[in-house]
Image 1 (cartoon, helix red, strand yellow):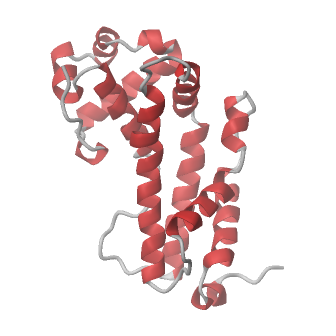
Image 2: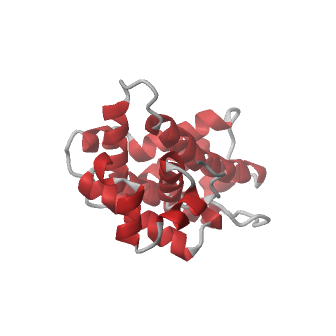
Length: 216
Protein backbone atom coordinates (compact mmCIF):
# COMPACT_ATOMS: atom_id res chain seq x y z
CA UNK A 1 0.00 0.00 0.00
CA UNK A 2 1.27 3.48 -0.80
CA UNK A 3 -0.10 7.00 -0.86
CA UNK A 4 1.15 10.34 -2.12
CA UNK A 5 3.10 11.79 0.79
CA UNK A 6 2.41 15.45 1.56
CA UNK A 7 5.08 18.11 1.63
CA UNK A 8 6.45 18.92 5.12
CA UNK A 9 4.56 22.23 5.20
CA UNK A 10 1.34 20.24 4.97
CA UNK A 11 2.10 17.91 7.88
CA UNK A 12 -0.01 18.46 10.98
CA UNK A 13 1.62 18.93 14.40
CA UNK A 14 0.53 15.38 15.23
CA UNK A 15 2.17 14.00 12.09
CA UNK A 16 5.35 15.95 12.86
CA UNK A 17 5.42 14.42 16.34
CA UNK A 18 5.08 10.94 14.84
CA UNK A 19 7.93 11.63 12.41
CA UNK A 20 10.13 12.82 15.28
CA UNK A 21 9.45 9.54 17.09
CA UNK A 22 10.23 7.56 13.93
CA UNK A 23 13.52 9.42 13.47
CA UNK A 24 14.48 8.79 17.08
CA UNK A 25 13.72 5.09 16.68
CA UNK A 26 16.07 4.99 13.72
CA UNK A 27 18.83 6.73 15.69
CA UNK A 28 18.40 4.49 18.74
CA UNK A 29 17.79 1.15 17.09
CA UNK A 30 18.86 1.32 13.48
CA UNK A 31 16.93 0.02 10.49
CA UNK A 32 15.49 -3.00 12.30
CA UNK A 33 13.73 -0.74 14.81
CA UNK A 34 11.93 1.16 12.07
CA UNK A 35 8.77 -0.91 11.71
CA UNK A 36 5.19 0.32 11.50
CA UNK A 37 4.43 -1.51 14.75
CA UNK A 38 7.42 0.07 16.48
CA UNK A 39 6.61 3.58 15.24
CA UNK A 40 2.93 3.20 16.18
CA UNK A 41 3.88 2.05 19.66
CA UNK A 42 6.49 4.78 20.20
CA UNK A 43 4.21 7.53 18.86
CA UNK A 44 1.09 6.20 20.58
CA UNK A 45 -0.92 6.02 17.36
CA UNK A 46 -2.48 3.24 15.30
CA UNK A 47 -0.86 1.49 12.37
CA UNK A 48 -3.95 2.47 10.38
CA UNK A 49 -3.14 6.13 10.95
CA UNK A 50 0.44 5.58 9.76
CA UNK A 51 -0.76 3.94 6.55
CA UNK A 52 -3.32 6.69 6.00
CA UNK A 53 -0.75 9.48 6.47
CA UNK A 54 2.39 8.00 4.93
CA UNK A 55 1.51 4.79 3.11
CA UNK A 56 4.03 1.96 3.22
CA UNK A 57 7.47 1.89 4.85
CA UNK A 58 9.06 3.69 1.89
CA UNK A 59 6.43 6.41 2.21
CA UNK A 60 7.22 6.75 5.90
CA UNK A 61 10.96 7.00 5.16
CA UNK A 62 10.27 9.60 2.47
CA UNK A 63 8.22 11.67 4.90
CA UNK A 64 10.90 11.35 7.60
CA UNK A 65 13.61 12.59 5.24
CA UNK A 66 11.49 15.46 3.90
CA UNK A 67 10.59 16.50 7.44
CA UNK A 68 14.24 16.44 8.47
CA UNK A 69 15.23 18.50 5.42
CA UNK A 70 12.52 21.07 6.22
CA UNK A 71 14.48 22.00 9.35
CA UNK A 72 16.94 23.84 7.08
CA UNK A 73 15.20 27.18 6.65
CA UNK A 74 15.78 29.37 3.63
CA UNK A 75 13.50 31.92 2.00
CA UNK A 76 9.77 31.35 2.01
CA UNK A 77 8.23 34.83 2.03
CA UNK A 78 7.10 35.49 -1.52
CA UNK A 79 7.09 39.14 -2.47
CA UNK A 80 9.73 40.14 0.08
CA UNK A 81 12.15 42.67 -1.39
CA UNK A 82 15.60 41.67 -0.26
CA UNK A 83 18.11 44.14 1.10
CA UNK A 84 21.75 43.47 1.92
CA UNK A 85 20.82 42.91 5.57
CA UNK A 86 17.91 40.56 4.90
CA UNK A 87 19.85 38.58 2.29
CA UNK A 88 22.77 38.22 4.69
CA UNK A 89 20.46 37.14 7.51
CA UNK A 90 18.61 34.58 5.34
CA UNK A 91 21.92 33.12 4.16
CA UNK A 92 23.27 32.85 7.70
CA UNK A 93 20.08 31.13 8.88
CA UNK A 94 20.37 28.66 6.01
CA UNK A 95 24.07 28.00 6.69
CA UNK A 96 23.61 27.55 10.42
CA UNK A 97 20.57 25.29 10.02
CA UNK A 98 22.39 23.21 7.42
CA UNK A 99 25.38 22.68 9.70
CA UNK A 100 23.21 21.80 12.69
CA UNK A 101 21.02 19.38 10.74
CA UNK A 102 23.97 17.63 9.07
CA UNK A 103 25.76 17.33 12.42
CA UNK A 104 22.70 15.91 14.19
CA UNK A 105 22.34 12.27 15.17
CA UNK A 106 19.36 11.84 12.83
CA UNK A 107 21.09 12.92 9.63
CA UNK A 108 24.25 10.99 10.49
CA UNK A 109 22.19 7.85 11.15
CA UNK A 110 20.25 8.23 7.88
CA UNK A 111 23.40 8.77 5.84
CA UNK A 112 25.29 5.89 7.46
CA UNK A 113 22.33 3.61 6.85
CA UNK A 114 22.13 4.69 3.19
CA UNK A 115 25.87 4.10 2.73
CA UNK A 116 25.54 0.66 4.30
CA UNK A 117 22.71 -0.22 1.92
CA UNK A 118 24.31 1.21 -1.23
CA UNK A 119 25.51 -2.20 -2.41
CA UNK A 120 22.07 -3.80 -2.12
CA UNK A 121 19.89 -4.25 -5.17
CA UNK A 122 16.62 -2.38 -4.78
CA UNK A 123 17.79 -0.20 -1.88
CA UNK A 124 15.85 3.07 -2.03
CA UNK A 125 17.17 5.01 0.95
CA UNK A 126 20.04 6.71 -0.89
CA UNK A 127 17.69 7.83 -3.66
CA UNK A 128 15.16 9.10 -1.12
CA UNK A 129 17.88 11.05 0.71
CA UNK A 130 18.82 12.76 -2.53
CA UNK A 131 15.32 13.42 -3.84
CA UNK A 132 13.44 14.24 -0.63
CA UNK A 133 16.38 15.58 1.36
CA UNK A 134 19.32 17.18 -0.39
CA UNK A 135 17.48 18.30 -3.54
CA UNK A 136 14.67 19.90 -1.55
CA UNK A 137 17.25 21.88 0.44
CA UNK A 138 19.07 22.78 -2.78
CA UNK A 139 15.87 23.96 -4.47
CA UNK A 140 14.87 26.29 -1.64
CA UNK A 141 18.39 27.71 -1.23
CA UNK A 142 18.70 28.37 -4.96
CA UNK A 143 15.39 30.25 -4.82
CA UNK A 144 17.02 32.52 -2.23
CA UNK A 145 20.11 33.28 -4.30
CA UNK A 146 17.95 33.79 -7.40
CA UNK A 147 15.93 36.34 -5.41
CA UNK A 148 19.20 38.00 -4.40
CA UNK A 149 20.17 38.32 -8.06
CA UNK A 150 16.77 39.79 -8.99
CA UNK A 151 17.18 42.33 -6.21
CA UNK A 152 20.53 43.43 -7.66
CA UNK A 153 22.50 42.04 -4.72
CA UNK A 154 24.18 39.02 -6.29
CA UNK A 155 25.78 38.52 -9.70
CA UNK A 156 26.47 35.16 -11.32
CA UNK A 157 26.03 33.45 -14.68
CA UNK A 158 25.25 29.99 -13.31
CA UNK A 159 22.96 29.74 -10.28
CA UNK A 160 23.83 26.09 -9.73
CA UNK A 161 27.54 26.89 -9.61
CA UNK A 162 26.96 29.81 -7.24
CA UNK A 163 24.84 27.67 -4.93
CA UNK A 164 27.35 24.83 -4.82
CA UNK A 165 30.07 27.36 -4.00
CA UNK A 166 27.95 28.47 -1.04
CA UNK A 167 27.33 24.87 0.02
CA UNK A 168 31.03 24.07 -0.18
CA UNK A 169 31.98 27.14 1.86
CA UNK A 170 29.46 26.17 4.54
CA UNK A 171 30.03 22.42 4.78
CA UNK A 172 33.52 21.86 3.33
CA UNK A 173 34.52 18.27 4.26
CA UNK A 174 32.87 18.51 7.67
CA UNK A 175 30.04 16.08 6.93
CA UNK A 176 32.40 13.38 5.67
CA UNK A 177 34.56 13.72 8.78
CA UNK A 178 31.51 13.46 11.04
CA UNK A 179 30.30 10.35 9.20
CA UNK A 180 33.71 8.88 9.99
CA UNK A 181 33.30 9.66 13.69
CA UNK A 182 34.87 13.07 14.21
CA UNK A 183 32.95 15.51 16.44
CA UNK A 184 31.06 18.36 14.85
CA UNK A 185 31.78 22.07 15.10
CA UNK A 186 31.61 23.73 18.48
CA UNK A 187 30.54 27.06 16.97
CA UNK A 188 28.21 26.67 14.00
CA UNK A 189 27.26 30.36 14.14
CA UNK A 190 30.87 31.43 13.51
CA UNK A 191 31.30 28.97 10.63
CA UNK A 192 27.99 30.10 9.09
CA UNK A 193 29.00 33.77 9.28
CA UNK A 194 32.44 33.10 7.79
CA UNK A 195 30.95 31.10 4.90
CA UNK A 196 28.29 33.71 4.09
CA UNK A 197 30.82 36.56 4.24
CA UNK A 198 33.10 34.71 1.81
CA UNK A 199 30.16 33.95 -0.50
CA UNK A 200 29.01 37.58 -0.54
CA UNK A 201 32.52 38.82 -1.29
CA UNK A 202 32.67 36.41 -4.24
CA UNK A 203 29.19 37.02 -5.66
CA UNK A 204 27.98 40.29 -4.17
CA UNK A 205 27.36 43.29 -6.39
CA UNK A 206 28.98 46.67 -5.71
CA UNK A 207 25.87 47.54 -3.68
CA UNK A 208 26.56 44.61 -1.33
CA UNK A 209 30.31 45.11 -1.14
CA UNK A 210 29.79 48.76 -0.17
CA UNK A 211 27.69 47.70 2.83
CA UNK A 212 29.88 44.85 4.03
CA UNK A 213 32.27 45.44 6.95
CA UNK A 214 35.79 46.38 5.91
CA UNK A 215 38.25 43.57 6.49
CA UNK A 216 40.65 44.38 9.28
